[in-house]
Image 1: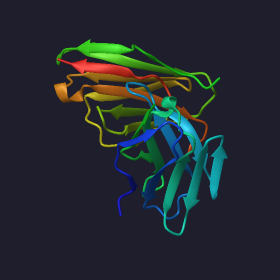
Image 2: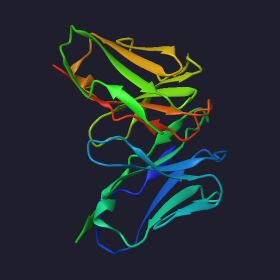
Image 3: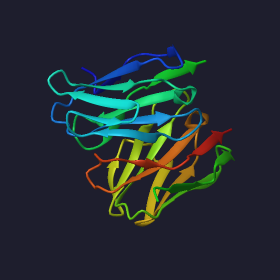
Image 4: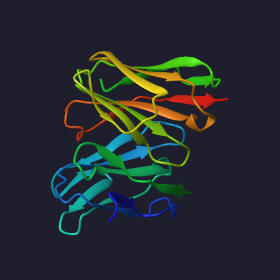
Length: 110
Length: 114
């Protein structure tokens, strides 16, 4: 299994849709996981941290499944402004640093 | 205030030039990072400094030379770069020293090597 692997994009959804991204990881000892959002030609910005089973912030929900070693990001009621690349970030196999997934591109249209 | 600043925003340099990228954070974070990001790729870790000491070097070529003058500043010295080194260079910082902690990114320096 790769250290981190994300759903291939792009995801093209209409406004108001619910969309979910998955991300698998290989380090079974990992305790901390992150979702970052990156807009075109901008820096990554933290969207959510996941330390236990999951986390929720408004329209965004992140869930962790340790048994299957994946995390997911659910976006409800999509807005045009949600259009971006979503990066799954997990500890590397050695547990010494974070490694970024290739990203999933979301495009929300009106 | 979760702010990491980077200068310059853009840099164009020839293969024989020497230049430096600068990064600053005033959040009291103890770890600082350099990443390289090519177009349509994720950020790739280059270096990690913990308490001003280099703790991780991801086999980066010696034409990239990091420096951490103090806990708030991080530099990346560039010399004899190649055109394939053109990329967005991102600096980040985090509170924890473990490297497995929320990282806050600066806006990046977009480097073009001619």
